Length: 269
Image (cartoon, rainbow, N blue to C red; front, side):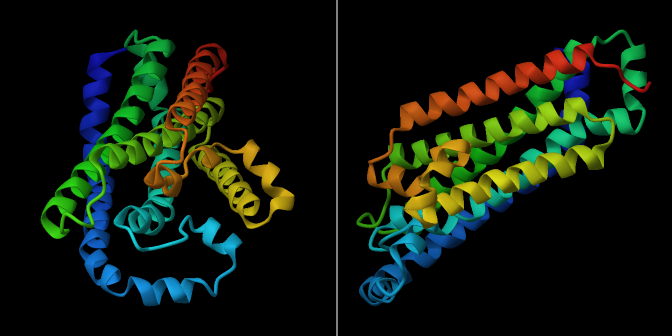
């Protein structure tokens, strides 16, 4: 790892990282502030939801809004969280390697005697630190919002909320890993962004299709998104340890693969 490069990249990206993080935290706080009103009308809302097919309720990740955990897992962690973190992971991974090659900045870096392995490792650390910051701010925002905006009867357990954020982080640790691998293979930032974004969209779509019908449920085995089920985490039915280990393994292998590929490939310098 090269600390001078790390400081430079963090300094240039910290505003973007913070914007994603504070935006995520504010959205969680907004959803939390709305929940007491939802809870007061939970019976009527649940009756309305009974009209929807079970498959649709599974897709959005909620079967009942009678608990804050069920509400926040569906309204934020099941919908907006994957979108926000997916955009961040794909976009940032494409910028951290492919953009440097595309804009000819890589030649300058290598001329300073920084090795390719150091560059790849440092940029991977920057990406992971960005993810940590966003999820940490989301977690803190949710905890504080729950403390000040919810009655004790509605609050979610700290352990459960932590697990929801942890598995969410590890999912996008994996998404960031394969996006970083794609970035290490590309000389064009837009190409890397398009491939990683398209691949992520396909994986997310496979998870949605698998939730809609049992005939295609096997498709969920092909995508890491199936390992992040916030509604099951909220209800205590998810295997958090297994999901965490698999997602961490996917991320670790793809980050290491990106380093190896980037070290040995020909670069248009």
